[in-house]
Image (cartoon, rainbow, N blue to C red; front, side):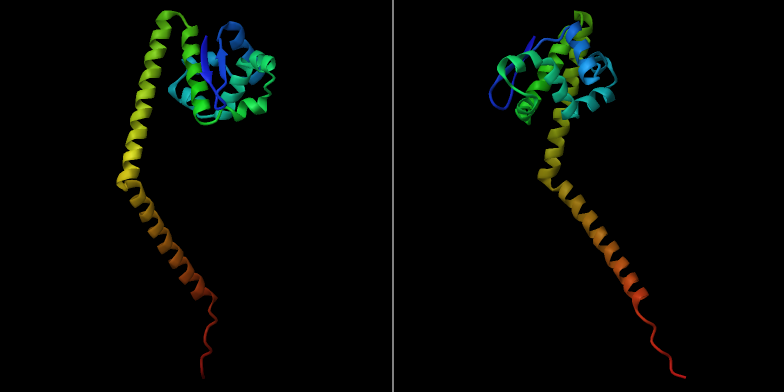
Length: 168
């Protein structure tokens, strides 16, 4: 069982077990086992779809939502930004804990490597933004676009000009 805090400060608990996995399959048409054990591409796709993640979390937290009188809209609104990140981390951690120790150890190592790679990529991207590399690339693309537009405009102007009458 893992806990996470949403953006309103409310703490939620998820408990992934065979019946909750089946419940998510039926209600959301998502196979959490495939998410955990699938290819990196499958996991990345799942993790990058906040709508699906929120639907999964609604399914897993349905009993608490009902008990606390929280509807899906309020729940979804509280899972933005850091709240969503907290929910995803709890989901991944509890899903890993669902598996036997030998497999869980492997899945945790893969998850840790993935998080380290993501952090490194974000750091590199921020450095490129800070040093102007990305800005320079955008400026180059805009300059090329302006040249293309100017050329196209000149061609259109030349096509739209009426020919001058010739004297005989």
